Image 1 (tube, rainbow, N blue to C red):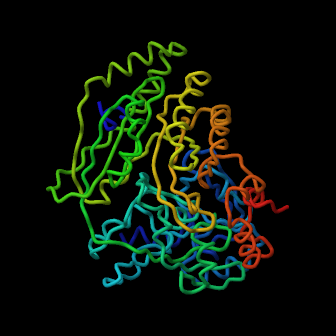
Image 2: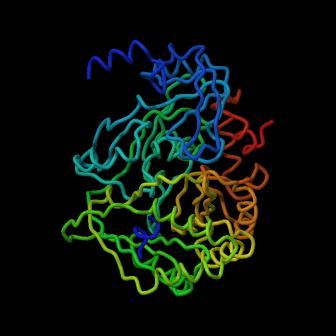
Image 3: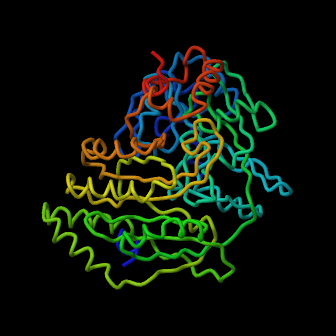
Length: 458
């Protein structure tokens, strides 16, 4: 029983143009005096902005920012769980800043609108003879949101998405369009690659890519301790490696991907969502009988074989995530992974019999973006989840200190409780980032309450 099995027209356009209230976002001019609620994917964060706008072009975006009192925040797809987006003033959508803008075939670079969804990148890139080096396992995010929060995939030698940025453009608090790269405004580039949306609104991004490739994905079930004993080897010998520990069992579902020239087999339908709900049902029926629960899970997976399939890169990396949840993920020194996983498992088994979502483990290569959780450090990531209808606070509060004890850095888009004092000790270029932010946005137009807390700004 593998992961797939277990973690089971013109008239219309004219109408909407005349009736923008039926659209999710209106233009800057149409948005005035309209109140439209916003909520993130899990429902844990929401707000009622005074202005909710999807500017048509750079001039409209610049005008909107200059006229706004603040805070001005950008909403991507809502797949972050922290309060990065909420504002009572101006909420911006970049849905009109999307699509493939240009391709440099010689350099293997491509420029996209910053509002492009990750799920819309693969096919046009492949048609242009290019491919991303890596992708996260959710492809609903916008590029701007993914870069802002340090979104990553897995792989010891594969960096997070922002590590492949070569240039970007953004509109600042003054309404100016600013461009930066490693060669032009390099310090701003180092700050802007992971900025939590606090420096300006990204409009365009240029990525360093590679030639297209196929991947073979292999999944299998293995006792956790056997897997942890060869954790480093599995990371070193495969392009990507990750595993999911099934709570109240001693088993984990491991997955690797590697490049291949084998023929495409096609990817089976993902049954992850049904599988997660089956784990929830087992939790509901057995309650506190963790011994029986563990025995049933271990019996279910015992003797299961491997699953393999081959497809193009952008059809292999992501999974569908239809069962909603809230998540906390920390990025830790790579060598601490096994001990952290064991400690999290022990907390669950001793104190949190309500947990049924698997614990996720991944690797990420180091990079040099100032607020990257992987700054100058090869990292592993350990993530815990809680069903969206259930209170996560007590569970996350018991797990979070484990990460602190191992110098963990939180994923910016996932729930954590750290503030400026603790964060400043985890990021060597913390003050440099704050100085750049203060120069670009001295009045704090892009700062909501959450960002003021993170940066220690009253």
